[in-house]
Image 1 (cartoon, rainbow, N blue to C red):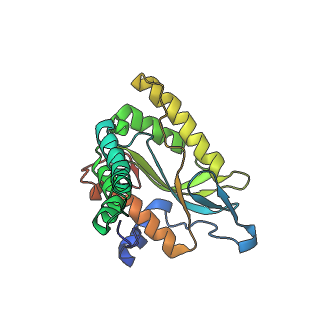
Image 2: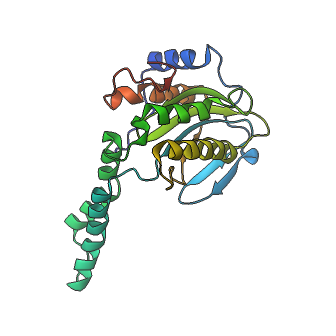
Image 3: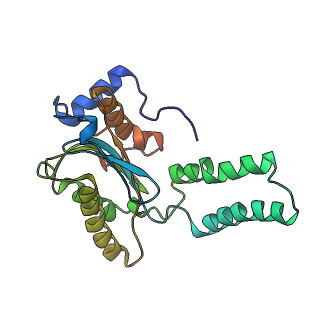
Length: 232
């Protein structure tokens, strides 16, 4: 996986994106004092949270890879160390590199290419997700930018006092999952339990995050993608 900052953009483009996203109004607050920040761990990822903070959040579908592809990857992950153990030797350097690739870049490439169940290609389902984001805008949080991609969602928003990051994410995911599963005639998990969030520290990070969201469909080769605010 590349170590390049995924939010890095030209200063002018980022400035334009921030203006489009918030009508020229920046978030009222970024990261507060250190003693007002809490770090929670509800799974594999730590989550930095604060009252009335601005976040960049990504959450993904629960089954982002085709079952056949997933089974092959999982088998290879298990087979490499098992074969080395049977032969009484440590994992070789080529095998170690292959395992690293299977755990990171290859899976991300499948995700970015949309090689999955991609339920959000369905416009009716995508609208349900978009509506869930917009439902409490201005009441529980302020939206600056969002994008519903075929298998994941990006949002830049600021919490409004009294509303928490996990509470907002729970509302988005639970409402949209129930409605989407009804549309798709299924009952399985719709979203991954975990999500990625980044507590934005300043105006520069905010602009880069907005630009990243705005550019997401273009990077994925999606032309005239409707499920994005602000528009490209």
